[in-house]
Length: 74
Image 1 (cartoon, helix red, strand yellow):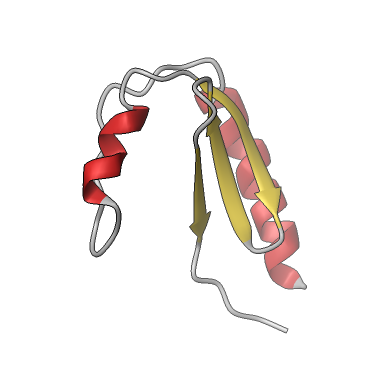
Image 2: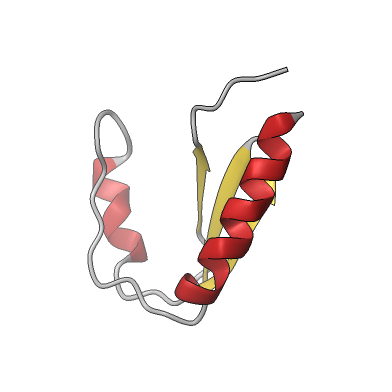
C-alpha cells in the first residue's frame, strides 16, 4: 500500500526532531478528545512510529497519539 511507505518516511523524518523533546502546548482541531489533550502537555516524546496507515507518537507517561493522515490509495 502506498500509504505505508509515505508514513514510514514521515515517521523517520519527524523522529529526530521530536523524540526526547517535551510537549509545551497542544490543541485539537475539529472534533476530538479536547479535555484529554492536556494530558500530553509536559510529557516527553519517546517514539514516533508508523503502523499501517497510522502515525503514532508515544509519550513517557504511557499515552500515545494515533493519527490517520487521511491518505487514500490502492
